[in-house]
Length: 366
Image 1 (cartoon, rainbow, N blue to C red):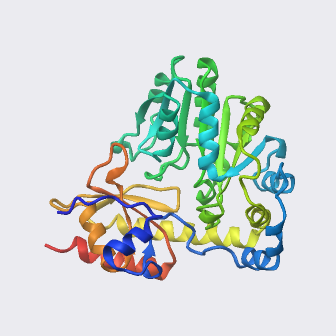
Image 2 (image 1 turned 90 degrees about the vertical axis):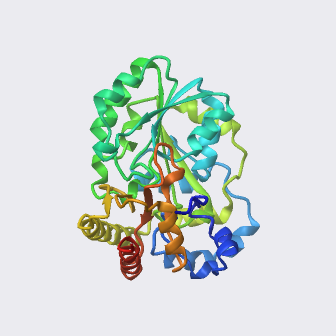
Image 3 (image 1 turned 45 degrees about the horizontal axis):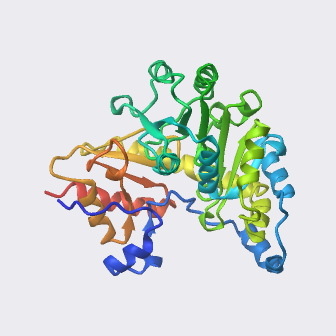
């Protein structure tokens, strides 16, 4: 079976070059982006306000922060915006300079990269496969010691789709308070969660000064090109240090304006939630009936799958699907996963049906 490179959802131009498939013809099940695309309201407002490009953004992004504050129910003073969450992760690490960090994995690789750029040492707490990658809270709490300067977790987690309850996060934060450990929670996929109030850590920022929560518009609002990310933190000292180190105007005027529209687009927000919840339930229930694979329960807009069939790998499935102009994520490049794991996100029902139909044909071969 093939052992080719695992491609990221943004690698469609590389795929186009290697496979000779026009990128516009590829159905991207790898990017984890809202299949509805950017809302019509945002498109119309941007088109009507293109002249904004001739003005500087507000250095403090006051209006945008107010809109975000209303959207996530927090004080705008707790919010900092950046050029994607990637910029905020980078600047936070430059300020914290953690000597030892604990990352809950398998997960997004950017956390480790940024910590190591600051010469920090990275340890992983590995989510157990036999627990469907759900957290063993008591075990994790024992691993949070005074030597750990930083704890990083993604909620819901990418690529596993597992999630941490808010009541579990409170216990983690209490332990981290005792050990003087800062906690970074990435909620990039939180808006896809059905009962969000039971999971989000945003209400906790006013109670814990050792916490920052990150979100953005790339996935839920289908706008990765805007590079709009934001951090929520109740520690004014941490926010001030980040603001001082951060370059001014890293978010352009149109990006800021689009964000102001997005967070008030209730019709689009509800339509997205309904679509993803319906497709998530439908697809998971379908996959559980297939003997060749094991789908892991997911709270997000994607699902992690393990291949049970012998002599079949995620790279092989990727190759077969890309020939049919469908791109999934070979998950073997994630820490602690191997060539038996792949991930795909939920697209429109017709596209999902096409993927399931083709995937079943591939699994039934041989």
